[in-house]
Length: 388
Image (cartoon, rainbow, N blue to C red; front, side, top):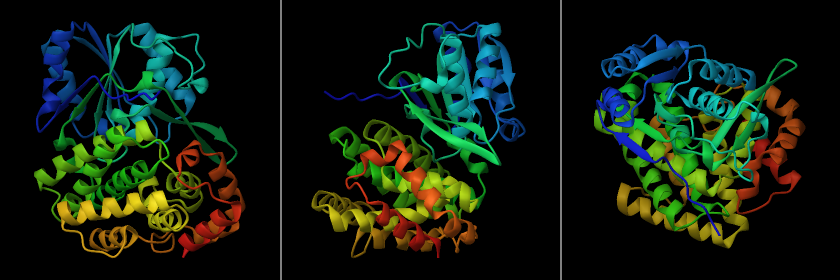
């Protein structure tokens, strides 16, 4: 038996942010808690959401302190605020960190007794009795608005350690996809988040849990990236490109949320912090190496990659001898680095910490969905190749 989970409602298109008040009226909300970060709060989006809600007679509270890579303790803090305020909706406005913090807070609000470090797809929590979770992404990349995953962090000596959790119950109830929010992304962020979408799609396509449902979403998301990411990078005001990339992020999110990811994400999660690189940049660097690795060792994966390449040739005008080559050609068009050195990352740290990176790769839950289970030596070689 398999399960396919996704948001109950998805509102999309320019101006959809302003319909939140109408949504509140139709669902009978009396109170709403908005969760965001300082950067998004300073862009004026929160004022639009607040005004829309207040015009519908909804009392609003705002938590605008979410940090990058938020700690479990911050999600718990927001959950305690919700317990005091008692909203009928938690509305996350921001990137993946904000949405993940709101997911953890939602669980803590619904189940004050529950340790959110133990969130798992194998234990039913009974979420959704007190309120709904609305996710409004401001970047076109993580897909968190449509996924069952939560990534929160624990403090460790010298920094933070990310912890990946998940449950179908924490898929946001409603996603609002307004591309106007994404047009403020600078060029580098547009590239890194867009390449993250591609990595989600490519890994979902060959995952051991891929299905007809996830293939349809993954293939379409990959096509959209090849067609529209270069346009969004070249012309930030190209709203068709922005809208299509915003939708692609959610489609890829729905795909990998139901299929799992693979070796590229497992390595990137470990390499990124060591190399001091954003996640999208890190996973983009490792992706073509993983595609080549999987294709050489799995006939089934090689066949799937070939199908995806043929689809991209037909639908996006891609011309390449292999999927890995097609990906690298796209990178050169949009300015995505192909190695840690090209990205300006800390190559020395990656080489010094290669054993720790490999250890963390094998601890990453994404690895179990890769079509090939690698040896330790294979991952060591992969990390060294992507360094420079």
